[in-house]
Amino acid sequence: MDFAKVTAKYYSKWIGKDNILLDMGSGVEYIFSPERNLVQPGYSRQFDLFIFRQPDKLIISYGDKLKNRIDLFKSDMVTRAEPNDVIEILGQRLGATVYHGIKYLYTTIPDIELQAVYLTKSDYPRYLTFFLANNPGCKNTEWLEEYFTEMTDKNLCCGIYVNNTLVCCSDAPDMPYMKNDVQEIGINTLKAYRGLGYATDVCIAAVKAIIKNNKCPQWSTSATNVASQKLAEKIGFIKYADYYTVTL
Image (cartoon, rainbow, N blue to C red):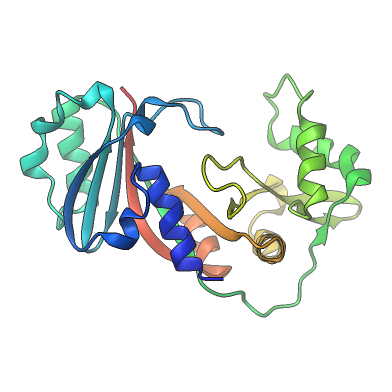
């Protein structure tokens, strides 16, 4: 599988113009996209502004709410703009909170012996206990068993048990585009078991399952989540792009 090509196609969908990351050269481009007016599956709000930044390109995707305001910062948005500059420009011009995240590209599977197992439907009671421990504020779990079953049917729920307790587990977030071609990895570890290498082990097992399902693994995290960034690199990802979102 050409991971780079599939990933470029996927984030082109996010931007709102098919294959722009494959076809565009260097420079700055503005894209008006109806996608910015929609709340994407798996997200709680729409992104009125979605900026995708790679070393040689800067793509600004905007929707109806910014249609008449985009000129406010056009002169300031240049390819060489550093992350903090982008955040400052957007904050000043729009008076809004800016989220800064990092997208990753999968490259290769580390060759290590794994402890992780692929969970099955019979693991649900222990998965429920694990889920509630990680989400103590969750009041409604009626949806959880169906979600768990969907993951286990595709071997996308990997975990590690310690003394019969599920301590680390992957999940498979909903994908807003190209569901048959890509799958992002989610990971959670019980607080007492963090820093022991379990997440690395589980995520590699998840990557193998995703690839076996003929899909391209994806990873995305906050620019401030250093632990997640290091984990991505440990399991075979490299940084692909910075991205910024604004919801007005």
